[in-house]
Length: 427
Ligand SMILES: *Cc1c(COP(=O)(O)O)cnc(C)c1O
Image 1: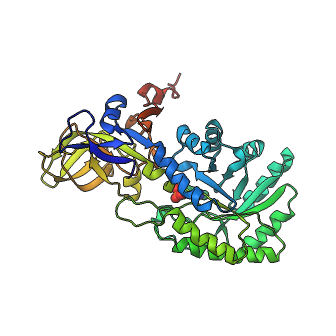
Image 2: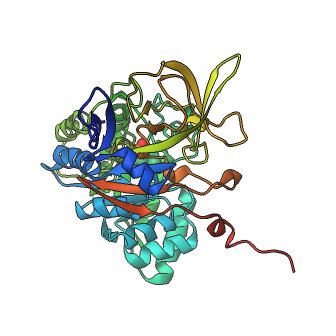
Image 3: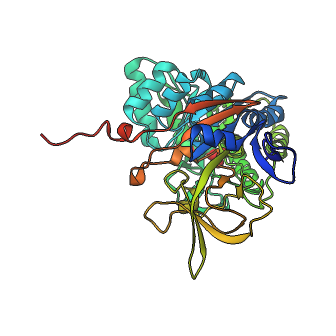
């Protein structure tokens, strides 16, 4: 968490008590100014994680397509677009975000298991780089729409290599019984069909086996299967321009040891060179590994509630703001943003005010806290705000991006009126 660090307090005389900064700004200031719960992102962190991919791929043809679903705020997309990023989208809404943020449609890959006709038409209209096709039915549908518009649709087949990503079952996508992709054994037939279609141009092959992978083994296993397929396609006379190995690289939430983009890509590049595919454009679709560590969520302790069983720290952020602990039992490190020397450290369940027992941000955490303290939930930049909801008619949090000593509101806090503005009473 390089960009979120404890430093001596800015306003007080340097003392034993330090506080959390986001780049050069004490987060207490941000919470006072913008309220809580509050998402805080670091521009430098985003840029650094993007550049780690760029540096690992700079020596060959490549396309880094940031997976928009991880964090789709326009300012986040814009920061990445300015660095030359492409984007991986899974809906037309995400495409419109990319366009609104100044992203280049020619660097967009369109993934997703069931692209609707209107989405296909819009993607063809703006000229996306390619469609990642997930079924034969979808291939025919795209052919029909492209023909009707007299356009050529560039496509890549998302194959399911049947490898175990060894991650949480909800975010594992490369197994035979997952809904994603085309069975790799059946892919040659689908490629042959695609080649025969009048308004389809085959440009690549693609896979994405899951998310939060903490070892390179499953990626390399999947790569071997793709290489076999590519050899077979070559023999069939099908010439691919790119290989898209998806996203999925994990981050350290707790004590995981994760490979860096370069650790992982060095092996991929080496294997491609050995197999004579050094000239192929290598496409990656990282989401979490770009955004997760670039964000924290700030939340204030409303009440400390000791019970016979345990101590609860009830905070103003909840499962509707950060869903990952509730749905994946995900661990996020939680810290007090000020270091107290006079408060006893106790074990707390950090919970929100939502009416669900599944509403927790962390369980059994050692914290030295009192009412009114500001807590930071680390690693919240990916799959954080984007999964938030209005459950319990709670307003979605504000988002702020810090750049050095400046902080910019990139999404203001929602109001209750905005929440029901699109609803209506019966006559
Ligand atoms: C979600 C997703 C990604 C990004 O995954 P991360 O684990 O966030 O890197 C990439 N490609 C596809 C097709 C996805 O669905």
